[in-house]
Length: 483
Ligand code: SF4
Picture (cartoon, rainbow, N blue to C red):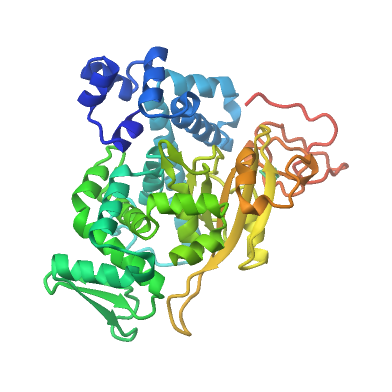
């Protein structure tokens, strides 16, 4: 409720007035200290023009899922926790449940730190300097990664920021921006409004710097290695910081941020959001996406942006009454590290353990640059339609690193026909569906050759005289545990 209220820039007093309740009562509900009565739920769904189910359960569902994943840790094996216990805990006190998750994250971070220290000790490495490292939330000993907090913040806001959308549209109208002349239009705007000159720097002069703004000299330096679309993006990002700084500061005041680093990273994410909204204005982009059936390459050419930028923009199309397909998006590297995740499709991403290797995003690394398509089914029966492709960063010379990552974009299968990528695919045929899971510890599949860890739902029984399809797959009657 809080996320939607903020999205519409309503104060608690304003929303309370619309609902016919007192602001203090509304405040108690927002802080989970009073339950949300059904009549208010319906009124809220009408005010925000959202479906009641999606409105009521998104964050609760994620909380239960995160708790279930945390309790899948072997640490809790002796406790016989059931899924009912987990749900009751989340329902009785979401605040306490989130505190348990924070504690679990702290435990994980401490464990990672001690593993790291022991391996360095065993390798005979000098440890001087570790104690001196500042505990700033991003170093050894941290319990809250700023990147995780920002991902959670974006998820809570449903990856849609109406104020930044409006500001981007206002800039487009005021500076008379067109896609064909966007870079020059932004250069003219920043010069005429702020007296800032844009310089293109030779690579050798400031090695490693892609964008640098000097407010005293009123100079914005962009690297010559940036392709034009990236220069446009960086320019729009800087204009966002200069014109929407107050809005970003306010949004970054979210009380769940635990460090200045998280708030600073949130500002960067918001400035990126603004830049995306300037380059791909909401209405024009949504219309093009629907007309072209979400063909990412066509949209990329039309708006002069890259594959990842289009995918990211597609996930932000959540304006009430003018929504696109509810997508999820994930970005990973070859080691499986997730550096970007957002889900409006309802799919869950593993947070504390490795993801399911059967997702097509991993096989995308086998065919760089090619779009891989997958119809996949989760153990709960929900089917998703996903595309995945690798991308390669190309800012740098011959000696530069060119890291490869993969982007996954997907939706629930009932939206798949709206996507050009579903052409020729028999979505109704269950044989085309790849059985997947969220993460092996939570997945009860017993016939998976790629299982990496035993499931908490099926007891591990080792029989040295018998071998199933995988070491951890039970043979015969694998009796399920209750979790
Ligand atoms: S056991 Fe489940 S989560 Fe693990 S690889 Fe197989 S399908 Fe994926």
